[in-house]
Image (tube, rainbow, N blue to C red):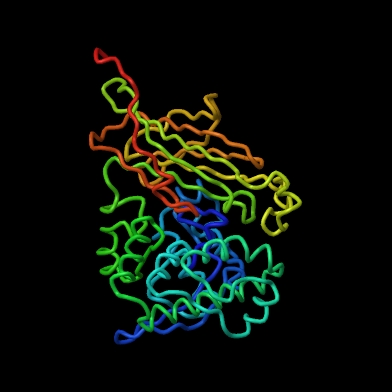
Length: 385
């Protein structure tokens, strides 16, 4: 499952491109390639956890494009498996997810990949590069392809061709092993490589590590906060959104810790985005969002047993939707940004019982994660309090 960060979902991006990979006695082979559009709509919607359905709606079990509105990858992966089986009658053993940024890390070791096959004529006619490198693969896949290839089916064909060539380079052993491992490790550390197994004994081992993408269980530290982004534009505008996320340790209250999660977002799209960007990128106003404007559902998770107490936008108190997921408090705010516009959303969590140092997990976007997560700050408190 290849997550497309240009259209944000909580675990990374819309899972547009799909492929079946077979591992047989140590040999990897690529099978059927497909897309979320081809999987279609699951009707009736597949059942999902009621808490998550309340937060993210029945779309979680209805559309392959929306299975990862939830940040809990085991939920998304298990649902994807069921949808794939329902559509194809093929039962897979697990789900591996990767995004184009992680692919760029891998290409640093394998070297460039060339686009061959029936897609080549379209690529040449559009002016897209026929060779993808670690430097150009992200802008090509997440931006240029939409500007230069207008038909979604041809876009899917191009993505499939790139995936095929990248897999071929990886599975054939092209590149230096140390570099490949380093690239995959970096992708895993940033949440860009996720793994789920349908085998319970295997999954119990995977669940101990961050690559499980779980929001609960042994891989989650006691004082973990999470900030996740879900596109509400129905388009590919997240390529232009730059964000920072920071924890601010507030003064304690009634013997409990308090922490503010601060999310600052700016829409860097050109001022004339409504006209200069393709309607497929802006959404063309289909979902009621003005072309060029980005709508995002910002979802913040606090530690187990804490409370989400308030939200502000640019310092002004704002309404928010409070929920509970796996005994973790969740706050949701919808935000719109016109080109050039910036806003800061603060969620304050209280009644925090954990005394461990807080840590932060965020949706992996086009930006390097190190540029998104800022160092934890401490509020100035009166020692006598």
